[in-house]
Length: 305
Image (cartoon, rainbow, N blue to C red; front, side, top):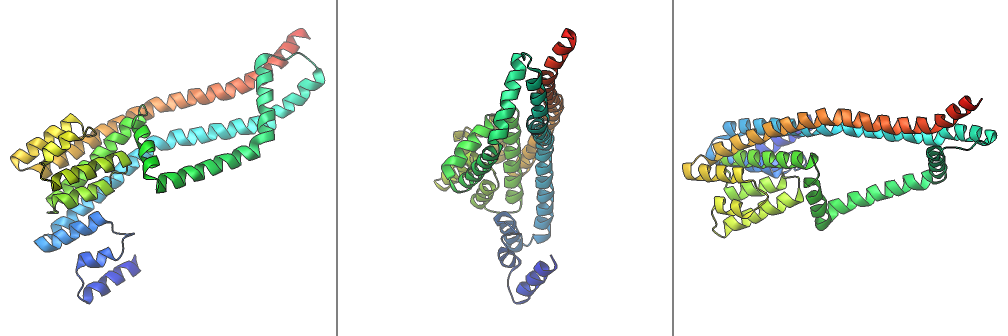
């Protein structure tokens, strides 16, 4: 950070504008940031623009943390469940299998199934891990370099129950906030939409916002262009109409962003409350089934003896 500030100071000292100096560091300052600073410099409202940028960055970080909160717990519990299951299949169940083979007793169906599954995992665990790693690598490369593939994945994510609604609310909140922040800072609407498209985080919405921008270039009004895109809900369309007709589009979009953030927070809280018992139930059933399969023969032998 010290080196970054020193370079900015040196560039400005040699006559560069603040925005031009920032554009030399795209990893730290994105297009949205630089466009807003440039607008602030040209309009003489740089302090106000920087304050809006700080507020926007804080809200964006809060948005990311909210989504992370919703996804962290289920992911951790799922990984733990897979690890526990793998350890039982590879280490614990083979010990029972050896004991059962020595006794020579007839085993229940569920026990035979688990023993066979344990044998398959021991034989194929290395190829399974390698295959999963290769599959994850191919998926990551494809989603980064294939627009068509990322479009399909993002479209499917929006259709997932629970998670899809959360993702949609996050995108709409980010879109409204970005557009409101840039519009209030004096950034031209076409540049504002370009920034909103780059921060959408979903290929389906990115394409829709760019189409929206293209409609504006062709002379279509914002409210009519938004109405053409089915990805934007009716409530947001109506708010944009009110904002355009009353000349308060920036304020209306800012309010829309807050409403979507509140809805997203409520959805996150509900999702977490529903996910915790559901995940624990699935984990309990998984481990309980494995234990039951191993101890059923023991109970039967005990009753015979």
